[in-house]
Length: 377
Image 1 (cartoon, helix red, strand yellow):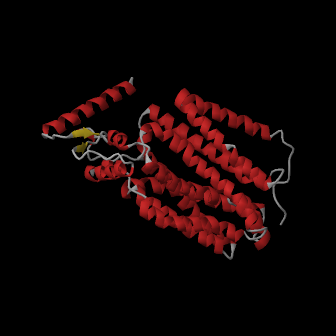
Image 2 (image 1 turned 90 degrees about the vertical axis):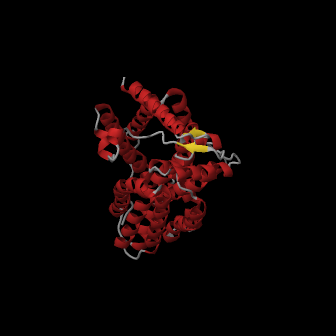
Image 3 (image 1 turned 45 degrees about the vertical axis):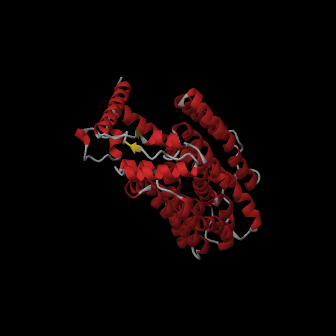
């Protein structure tokens, strides 16, 4: 089928690239970016530090996205800005800003680089958090939340891309599907002690805590966050890509030999040179179009189910903090199990099983006795 033909074509391209290198009388070894990363250690000291530093961005995202579960009730009671409808409006504005931001950060990361966009996203997030914490009316509060939403969308999106591009292929599933998601769950769990620490009415300090973390992380990212070698390779800057891989090798104590030459394994056919690919190319073929539509629909479902139910945990029966903790705690074993199953059973059956479990869980909510979902004005 088409997949086999594509694999044969890629193999032919790699053979042509190596023959071109030999024709240039290059005496050293020719490697692709993947092969060079594997040589210097695909998940060594450098990648572990990157996982921690970029994972902290996910922790901040978790605190700012789901913090309203804890602080919104305090905010409304302390300020008198409204009730349940206003709380829902501010959450809608936050996630609406994320929706718009996703169309910005992806192309921007491809044009300007991953590192610059991560730094810009963290700065925007810190700015939005500061405006939110210092807001003196509901309009300014929502402006701050919208800036936060725009920034956190970039943090989560671009950090995922950068980290996936500096680790070996065998480690990508555990890094993306487990480690980063665990940091997000930890951010949710940190909301609980911060809520108790700052008292029953001090919602501004609760907003300020993740904002301070974001401000603290800016100089650390400036010092230690490196650009993706794959970004340089995609731009045709193989010298810069090689320099980044050499730095990774030095950090992992597995230096790259001096006689290495990189080749771009994603070399475009001559008929496509000069053409630019865009989002609409995801709808070109019938199979790719169907996969794109299914994935987009599934992310819409995730937004409604995951964030909808988690944000509503403060209005369910029982303690707000116990509900939030359980929502975060069950995610850790779920991530561990799902990424292991993906590597053994494949993506499709795990994807279908998780959707079925989520659907059954939502149906089970219908059996729970109704409770008041809005706190009084």
